[in-house]
Image (cartoon, rainbow, N blue to C red):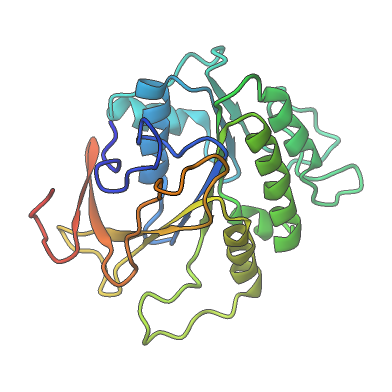
Length: 273
């Protein structure tokens, strides 16, 4: 089910996933999480595109929650033993406690210092062949356990280097509650959150989807907004291949339904496209 592709197409032959060598950054707010956008990409990759997915979950949400939701929208996850869907669940448990599975890298080293080295090595070991979809889900949570924005950005840059060498696709998600919902709101002074998003945007070679809640709050028809902001072009794209631009001043709006998401122009309410 590719419910966003009609409104936010990608500059590739399939248009249901970003092109190879690109980085899609998805930011959200606590009141309007971006899970639906990630489910859209996973559904496209598992269904039409038949791509291998490496999902790195920093949010602490297990595979079971993904299984339940994707089954509901008509895209069941492959069996847990399938190489098509790799779930990496970094662990913040002390090093003295044994790992439960091979895909639970440590977020703290033997000196009890936060580190992404083991997670990076685990990701790289699972990139086999070309055309993978790699999802770094919940990068903001890493700052909550003590990692600096510089360390997180360096990690993403290193993963993106491997993504480009394998002609794969990178998707990063993080929170952006510090961003103002309108020009009349004073931005947050959370420097770590500001710096992390800024550093990722400077990596370029892709697009930024900004998911946010309404200043007026949720309604029965509208749960949030999404805008699309192209960054520098991925390597290999022609001059006429562009990511869509949906301005923050005139974003698309959306409403979550039991097994899909309805997307429509701002101000049209139930007049869905």
